[in-house]
Image 1 (cartoon, rainbow, N blue to C red):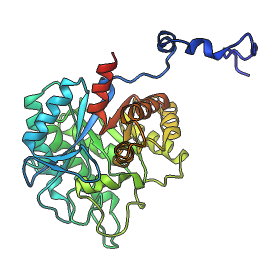
Image 2 (cartoon, rainbow, N blue to C red; image 1 turned 90 degrees about the vertical axis):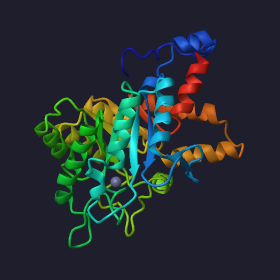
Image 3 (cartoon, rainbow, N blue to C red; image 1 turned 90 degrees about the horizontal axis):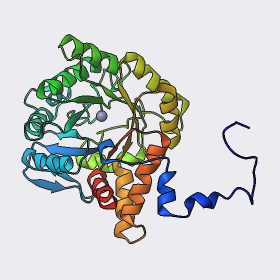
Length: 335
Ligand SMILES: [Zn+2]
């Protein structure tokens, strides 16, 4: 039995309820806390259309024009949220995903607009090709119809550099190609961007919880699925190995995605890497809470706060969540 944990004095000398007796006592011994400055709000910015286009499976989340995106970013900053994570919905797609690295592409233009309006707010850009390829996969296809890992690396690196030139503060590759963190680090360093951190989606699982996101980003694969590059949800040890490889390649922060069903993975990755760990509370997790709350089955605010706090308890330093603005508001109301 480990020393330091008092198990020697059972009931009635030990009464666990003593420290739960009042709000003050509960606050005094609370282990995991949530702050707005640990939250990142994901946003979808669309090239086509104007204003706000609601996403049916994600009530309260819209595809935004750049002007609306800037308003949303200003709101996020006013709530004390640390940053926004940008996902682009381009007007045109092709086999290579060339829209991903265009200097005047949608994410590049959106990044410039936010940094101009709200310079202190962190802009974190998702780096992947699936929103830009006409086949919807996260890389270019080889002759055999599967994603060609090595041919994709250069395109991801090019995309990342174009984001940093536009003003991105943090680069977040989500493609799950082997070697992409190293390839991006090398490209950024060669371009003089030594100080731009990489937040690697290290353990991204082939998850059913991504369903609503694909409606939002219009990135459903035209054929097959992503199990050839995203991780098997059954594998925790492999997730740690993925994270350690990303650390070796130069990742500054690592991410686990999804979050809600992966608390064990967050804890294991945190312990193994010692790096700041992000957890992505994904679209399906958001949709479940919104649907249950709309039906009157759950109280939305307390459910969301419990979920986000549980991710902090699991070891997440940073949480990416569609609930970020609501959570920041609820936190402000509590204090
Ligand atoms: Zn992708």
